[in-house]
Image 1 (cartoon, helix red, strand yellow):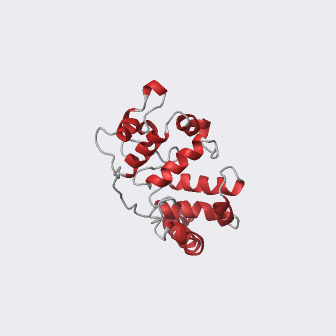
Image 2 (cartoon, rainbow, N blue to C red; image 1 turned 135 degrees about the vertical axis):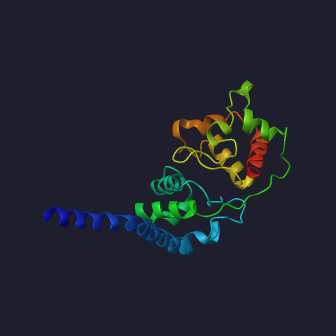
Image 3 (cartoon, rainbow, N blue to C red; image 1 turned 135 degrees about the horizontal axis):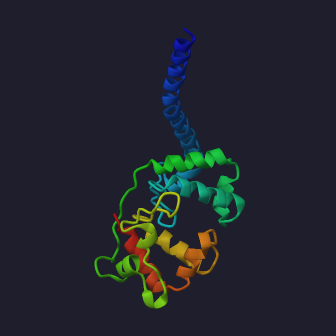
Amino acid sequence: MLTKSYFFISTIIFSLSLFAEPMNRSNQYLSAKKIVNNLCVACHAVDGNSAISMNPKLAGQHSAYITKQLMNFKSGTRENAVMAGMVASLNDEDMKNLGLYFSQQSLALSLAKSNGKSSLGEKIYRGGLSAKGVPACASCHGPAGHGIPDVYPRLNAQHSDYTLGQLNLFRLENRSNDEGMIMRVIAQKLTEKEMYAVSDYIEGLQ
């Protein structure tokens, strides 16, 4: 009898656990959406597809990457006065929930302005610049710019103005939260023309 009772109780507990995770995810999503409506919507839009070219699209970005950037803004590891103010009231759970929320939004694709096949941007992205010791962007961010979750961010369809701005920050070492100085070393080897070309090419990646 005890064995049957134990089996019955175990079955109920297991069944409840199957529903707990989706419910928890739903609560995280709703909690994040409230924050988005209060803090994020003006610059990044409610679905993370910012219409302002200097503000990044967050839709479809890997959740761990978004969470890390928010935490870096809060700690000062990544400097930005506007973002520091925005994250000041957020706790770790809030930032993780925001990462989850934006990762679940659909990314609006874009077109490159002038960069296509056989362009300088494509050359840098897919093959790098061996004479300068610049590796192919695709080696870390993938052939389509989708990145590697928990390691490298998604880049495709990102505003070229934003990408160019970040490359310049890395180049001047005004952004230094890249692991192992990878982006700072690369950006310092690129000319303004090369940075513009690869930023434009990235925006057109599907």
